Image (cartoon, rainbow, N blue to C red; front, side, top):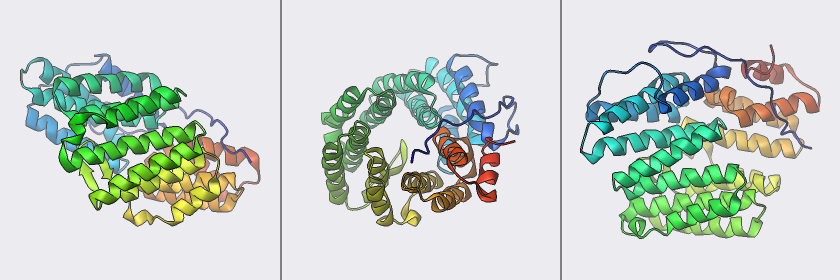
Length: 341
């Protein structure tokens, strides 16, 4: 049963203006993309200059918005971070503003990937890498490379995506960066494992997953990373394994991987929502519609804006609508996601 039918586009929404603008949860993704595009192209009014410490504080709040799936707030904060970061970087000889701007672009890339906006995603990821290189920060360079590998995977450039991730993991600078460097290597290998899965390479996926798991075990628990709020550890490896097993066409293995992981152990609402939507995807492929809907409703409870705005989730909901009987719960979820009026 193929329930991954392309979803109907969500209705448009006006851009936010000021700090207290509002938009529907179903359309907040479009708003965020539009505002990020304007900021990246230098459009819009000039903002007051920020000091580096203010920029760092704003970035911390933007990261919190991302991990708690507060995308309406992020649609205001993140574009302003990019604008202010560019202004500060151009007027400073210190590497600190460039690094803060690199981190802001890394966050923008992750959000654009989530919203399936690849063209702006490529631009954001490349800027993140250039700025991180200029700031001479190997961890930031590696995280930018990981996002470039994800974009390559989404473009079906699987061999290139594997090379980007694995070459970055072999950077000697990561091997001398202590625990955080090892954790960043684990994230890159984990990314490569998912790319192998998307390319249909089940054995390669499992070999790379085992390598990432070995690094996680050696570190002895989750290692927090500045540019990746979930950090790296056995929990993140297991979460990626659910997605990877789905991608190689083995939903039973995906569900088994999910049963081995407690969602309460996941580090953020964003990651918990991803867990439940991955479980829903596996259940859909198994034809277990009612359980699939329950998993989606649990994801919605954990992170409403994530569930309503993310195109992959909308596609799954749309597929359920057209593939069999519907229930009031499914129709309500579809309406809240902008798929029914």
